[in-house]
Length: 86
Image (cartoon, rainbow, N blue to C red; front, side):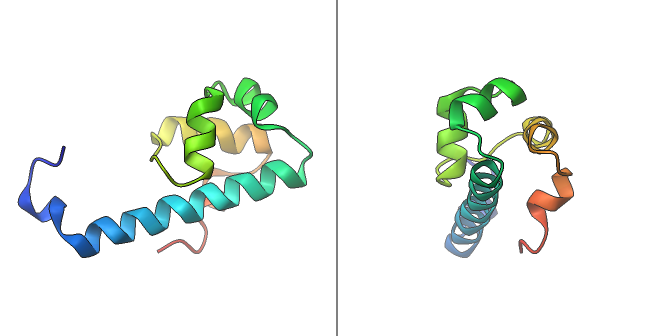
């Protein structure tokens, strides 16, 4: 639950939803490109399959530590997962 009124701004909420979808789509595309299942990527990165599934579909955000773990498992940098996202 947001703690500040500014965190409830509808434009801000929409922007973060868009960013989550973009990052998730990029993770999913890289995973598929590398021939990995969600289960395999989850095991390689230490993220549960359920979390990974929600991230790929943009339903949840992810801690930056897990983003680095997923990036490493995919053989890219965390910056590569965020490139071009605004």
